[in-house]
Structures are given as structure tokens and as C-alpha cells.
Length: 296
View 1 (cartoon, rainbow, N blue to C red):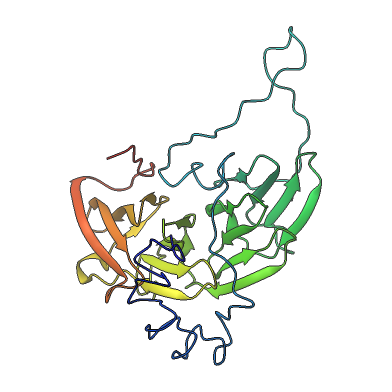
View 2: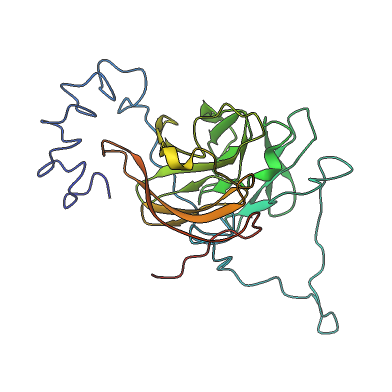
């Protein structure tokens, strides 16, 4: 929606925000941030567009932002009428144990991005073509498999481990990398405005400031974090669900025996970019299911 003539944000004609003439941020003339003249990031000549998950295939955890598991592609056809299941065409394992356990692979219908655990040596993110050939390898830490990656239509990837969130171009070159906080991210997801949301499981003794963080998919800049004092003891073991610019997080405080489904609103232009919305408490931790959103 940004950059559209009709949009209320980033509109050349109408907007009071991100307008070429008037804005204090993202303005070609006035700002020290995202300014052609002054900034080392966000320059018009080098800035990446926002990340868009592929429209077909299983482009992110649970295949789409709603967590619907809907792939949008026909399943493989068995090679003969007598064969009742699809033939295994190829396989690859980054180590003898493979990923061990984790959220596995995503695909845009032409390429596959798989996260592995405990491999070391830089094989914890591997991108394959449809024939099973390794296209490139991303250098992620040994806990990468707890997060499914996201893949776009061209084969670009966003992936996470406990140390960093990284965006790669389709050739495997690093576009940007932003540090995480030593806790376990459970699959990045993306809002309608192109903001990457990372919810984390916080290890005992964690010093992380929040359970939910938001980053700009164009440059990896931290947009904000959920700072509600009532939620400081909560973490998550599940992937957030996205509806527009609201995400739903299945949160838990195992010490208190409390769990909640928490709505979190993400607006990078708001005074509080990441804020707690409505919540439901009425079930016990832990939970093993990510939230699912169908329509309303």
C-alpha cells in the first residue's frame, strides 16, 4: 500500500507521513533517516522493497499468515496407476540426524528453503531447487530449525536463529542481518505493512526485554517491541498468526500456570509501534498449537 497514489501513507499527494515534501522521516529533503543525502541505510538507490511471501506453495510457517496450512498447489501425482502414493524423488540431510525436529521447509513451488538443527558449519539453512540440488547455504546457528523460514516468489528468504534475523536475496547474498537476543524465535511472520514479527521463547534467566519484536522487512531495522508490563512473564512456543497488521500470539506463563491468546497490534507510525490488544485467558500452559484465523 505504501507509495500508492490513493494511500494515506507514503502518498505523494495526500499524506502527512512519509510525503516527499512534509515528512520528518523518510523525506528526501528534511530527514536524517532514509534521506538520499544523509543516511547510510534506506537510500532510494539501494533500499530493498518490502518482503512479500510467495503467493503459492508453502511460503512460511503453516503456509500463510493465517496459519491455515493451505498450500495452494496440487500434490504430486503417483507415477503409475498401480502406485497409490507419490514416489520420493530426492532427499537430502544436512547431517545423519537431519533436522532432528523442528518446523522444516517452505517452498514457493520452485525452490525449497529448509532449516536444520545442530549441524554446525553453516548448513542450518539450505535452499534447494525442484530437483534437489543445493542452490545456496545460509550461515545460521544450530537452533535454526525451531523457525520455519519465509520465501518470496523469486526465492529470497528471511530466516532466524537465536542470534539473528537475516534476509537473503534469491542468490543467497545477505541483504541485511539484525541481532536477536539469545532466546528462541518461533518462526518469523509478516504483517500487511511489511513488518516482520518475531515472537520468542525465553529461556530461564533470559534478559530479553520482550516476547514480541517487530522489524522492517526492507532493512531489518527494529520497529518496536511489546512492552506491556502485564506481559513481561509470558513467552511463546508457537508461531504467531497474522490478520492485516494484527498478530495473535499464544502466550504462556508456566510458572503461574496461565496461558492466553493475545492480540498484538503493529503500527510502525504509532507512538507505541507494538501494543497489546484484546486477550483471552481460559486455558492452561503449555500449548502445542499455533493460532488459526479464518476471516473474522
